[in-house]
Amino acid sequence: MTLTIPFDNSYARLPDSFFSRQPPAPVAAPELLAFNDALAAELGVDPGTAQDRADVFAGNRTPTGADPLAQAYAGHQFGGFNPQLGDGRAILLGEVVDRHGRRRDIQIKGAGRTPYSRMGDGRAWMGPVLREYLLSEAMHAMGIPTTRALAAVATGEPVYRDAALPGAALTRVAASHIRVGTFQYFAARQDIESLKALFEHTRARHFPQAQSPLEVLEQAIERQADLVASWLSVGFIHGVMNTDNTALSGETIDYGPAAFMDSYHPVTVYSSIDRQGRYSYDNQPRIIVWNMAQLAGALVPLMPDTDDAIARFTDAVNAMPARIEAAWRRRFAAKIGIDAPQDGDEALINDLLGLMAEASADFTNTFRDLAHGNARHHFPEPERYDDWHTRWQDRLASETDPAARMLAANPALIPRNHRVEEMIQAAVAGDMTPFHQLLSALSTPYDDPAPENRALTEPPQPHEVVRQTFCGT
Image (cartoon, rainbow, N blue to C red; front, side, top):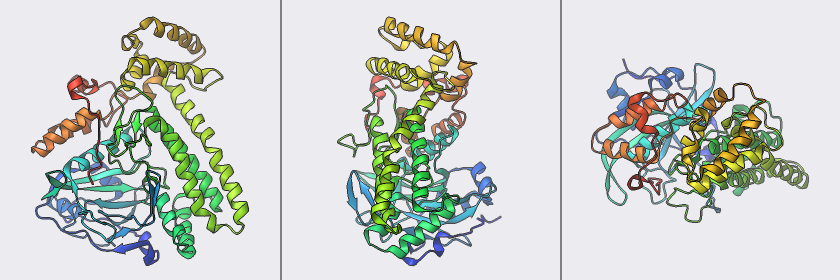
């Protein structure tokens, strides 16, 4: 049976200024590396044969009903505004309305050059494709809003970065690919008619209860505040929080150099292109506020009274740090077994984090072991931990079943950077077994791992530490 996708495309009905229509560029020898059967069923996709999947999701065959296009957008990249970015290596095949009534994009990354490629080749190599597949599915299993991975396909062609590397393509599923940078694109051009059309499309798709740009901004702020707090709670560092990588849907998007922290330190950076630490672990709350300020600026032209709009939008953005702090407090309180945070709980949480930073304690394992009652060994000066532990136990005396709450808030398994790198090296050598083992184990991150997966919980040895992660573009 031939692969079929029940497309129902709405973005393609927007004005031509929003995109450039073109199909993916075919590749030499597509071979399916991974396919998400459960997600395909959710989307109503009939997967056909393995070769069908390889051909469609490498871009060699455009399925019936698709309306492929590359989206236009702008963005602040590391604080500098670029008015012309866009999908330089991605093609949106189209949209489906899934089995739950949710509209979702299906996009191929690594689909070849587009009018927005600038000097790029429009391709992707296998490492970043498998990294994004694994990390996005791990985030989904943790319950954190994210894009999903539907398929990974080897192209049979090399791509050239520092060396020749095996090419691949990722099929990504998202609530949409509308970004802060999409609004910036039209605002920078003073194209008010397109900006209005984008606003109405986005409002109907993501904020149906909103009646005005201010309400859309406020709801977007709420989603982003919750999202970044959830990142912090699992030690996730996005690595490239540009405005073109901030989705209006509130999903985590564009994993590029993303990584999960091993040893806890608040200024941790992995991204090789983040040389100043702009997107470090602890700076993510400040950056998302900055990004929402850029969205607010792009929405101002839609308001009849500019001065009033600036004042009201400024108030909304200025209220965002308190929203993030409240969301952070809730999540970290749960991580130490507290249901409803009270005065003094934030100090209790921060004191623990301070001890962890001094000890270079493993972020994931320390919190998980706290739930199991055996975290003391993570601290080289255990007496200092004992003092904190006494205060903590006094606080938990009024809580009901804190251990269960902690186990539900603290994953046992994360995609550890050294395991991800091992997986990539094995895949490049033709062995997909580590990928599938990691993917399977990470599908239940809050369960204590089976014996064969316990090694996946171990922090890296000194020679295994990954100090930098890379975009792959």
